[in-house]
Length: 229
Ligand SMILES: [Zn+2]
Ligand SMILES: [Zn+2]
Image (cartoon, rainbow, N blue to C red; front, side, top):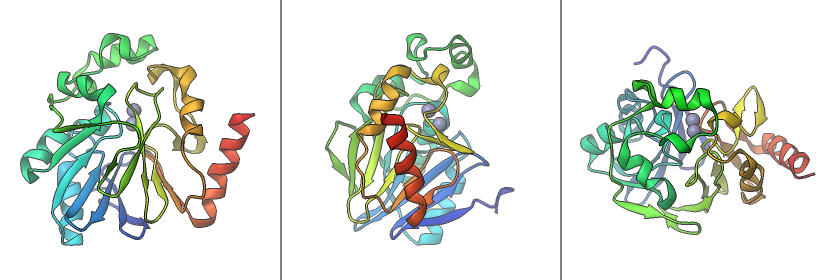
């Protein structure tokens, strides 16, 4: 057991949130062939993800990354090595993943660019096994390209339950928001990206913070409609 309890929470039938640290979430999506892990977390996150997978009694067959930022991909090299899972990322973030860091022009803010020079902002380079584009379906998840936070950021719609995993396209650390502009590759695209996420949702899972489930999804829709005005 980890200090933070490696919190597991079912957000929709077949989708379990794993809090790999106080602030970072991975998700385990059950499929006929095994588990799809959405986001691999920080460098030490593989233990928590594999512990959760073992609890569910299923093997990890693929790793889908919402975007190539360190807090979502640092764990992917270890997790792939320990599971032989295939790694997927959107075409527009694949070069970042292979490089092991966010390139200098990949962040708009000077402070974020400084962070990219630190070890905490970098990761073991990983070549994706397959790249994704908008509309692809992988492990029962439909890819929705939501660029802005990064060029190849994706949200993932679980088609059978209509739960959506939004990565860092939407932040829920306290209130709902678009996330820090300084950490976005193209801050001006963030609102349009959120508009691309479909409605009629059963749950919203975030890269950071607690999910919205059932009636709580109304909060997301209300926030989004205000954003559009
Ligand atoms: Zn991010
Ligand atoms: Zn993040």
